[in-house]
Image 1 (cartoon, rainbow, N blue to C red):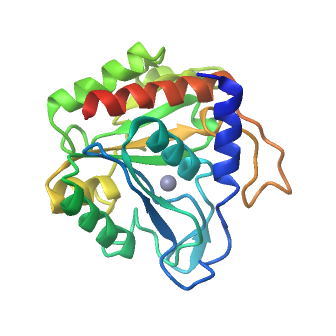
Image 2: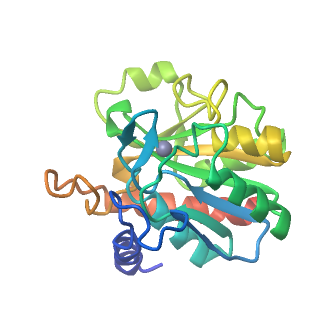
Length: 246
Ligand SMILES: [Zn+2]
């Protein structure tokens, strides 16, 4: 992999997102990027989304990451490219969830990888949520763990992570109490497992392993840049995971 080409591709894909504007044609704020594998990458928070009476900021670069991984692996992708007037990872009923259900049926999807962004302040790189083991089969959960370990990430407990002096993006946690993937909330992962009857997991990526350079709704007030090595390590790990799950 040519790191520079991959990082620039992520920036180019991310620049297509209109974070604060609804779709110009009045259609849905998400697209399907077709693939050939029975795995679907989902990015429901790629742009602003409304929860209750306020808009929440995008999980920047999750749409770009999902699309890049789709291009490189052949997985299907459902990603947001414009502002949503609901929160597909929170509202029980959502046009995004309806689209997901149609895609799963039409393409015999067996696994959904739902991508999100979390802050660096948690001090770990990635939080995997499997609803405490209820969103996927044990062997799929094991495949996810092995993919991270083979990709150079090490598992940490919540207690260990609390004691990190600063961000350690190469560490991941599984079913951390703040990132369960959905026990009470109507997440995409829970919808997949309970309503669609297929396996899924939620992945929260810290900013350092996701944001090449800020272009989103905060770009004018913040010039944050993630760690290129961390982003490349995350891309390679998810590529292997998609292949292993397929
Ligand atoms: Zn999110």
